[in-house]
Image (tube, rainbow, N blue to C red; front, top):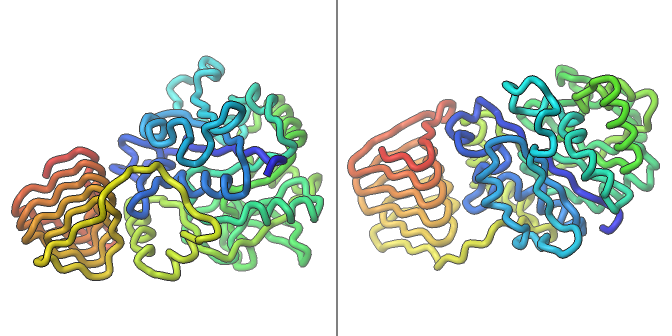
Length: 373
């Protein structure tokens, strides 16, 4: 899609995600056995034919840099355009409040990359949160944006997604937004997922106005304040969507992947989700192992018992270990005799022989990256 440029916001850091974001942003949390959260919106853009994408970062982004690299795995390593990683160096010193490390809102984050936006070749821009897990038909959404003549198209869900949205939209019969709410107490509103399409020209005007009036919040200062001045329309998406808000929420949404209908929706063959390639041999299951209803990536060695688990690449589970309702991230080592339930192990965690850890669905145990238990 030569007329659209992608901008991803990958700077959010939710304190309720605790151990999961000690070494990374919310956008680079591992998900689904082999992916990072940012892979979903990045793949949505690539599947729509977008070849130029900028990723706005702010802090704790080393993990994200390692994962994205040059963008080769998403076919974004190009001589002209492609993937551009936008750390906050150009914005250093712009704010005197140096104790605040996060952007106050999307408008401030966009204003920090004004020079980048000025050199965008495409006529339209899609703005999206990097911590959103969804499979969107962006090409179809863009076509509807052009067809309706909207100034801004907002992607919403047809149902309550189970996470806190920045905006809830009430529309008329034609899909035009007639009210923008900051809470979703009413039943006849659609939760917005934080994906917006607008022209580069309009974006430039909004940023200039925001800088002059110190506006920082896209929802409140653009959608809500200018709702009567702009033609804002909603595109209603019917599929699966989530944005992890806490450790327990991440656990529940990961367990959803054990449902075939969720996997079919999220990992559509028409719109594949791409990620960083790590060539591995097939997973080995020993004759003594017992596995039931799991999602297991390649490169693993399973000798123990697994039930209702999501297992990432390179995991080793020794014989005699019993795991139920667990998430084992990349290169986790589970030694013999271990008994785990409702537990999340981050990357490169080792659980030594005979240890027993049991959380609960509402309060799963999360073990930090590289820990030895």
